Length: 114
Length: 116
Image (cartoon, rainbow over all chains, first blue to last red; front, side, top):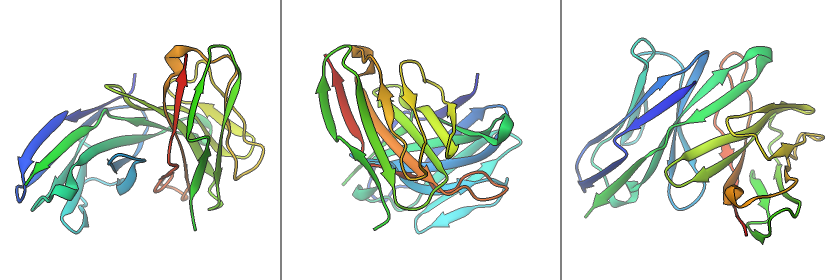
């Protein structure tokens, strides 16, 4: 059974801290890994990772994938209260016949205290 | 404006009464998908579609049906809803880039369904 595990499940830090969110996976036919941010609404896309060792960056957020050890991390530096959200990791699976299923982890609930 | 729309946004219904949640996208995306989100269980994929007339089961397809007769629409059908289908439902779509699977997935605003 395909599995995507995120840790920690919940994290409370102070504004200005740096946080690292983890996503490990055990899946067959890995295609890519996605990170999303979800506030009190629909998830919004952050990154897509397909190759090991290539860091993706967007402002204070960055992410990297390790396909050998089967995990990805999402880093947020100089956190702000607006970073408070649930961060979701998802793995895209390539099935037979060209289909692409998607499995999400349960998310990390990040709270940034002023 | 590029978007994914869902209707209705909120629905309270009773067990056994057939319902359809519509999903439409205006971005000419090939890939569309339905998810349900429940506390402690996260987002789980119900069904997805790679293109018109091509659909596949996700992780939790039981009790649901879908159809993809047109590229822009992907309705979710509950033939006989039950209380365990009470959930927050999201529709999403994306363009499928060649060679790397699908890219950024755009989510609709969500449909909160309660089955009594």
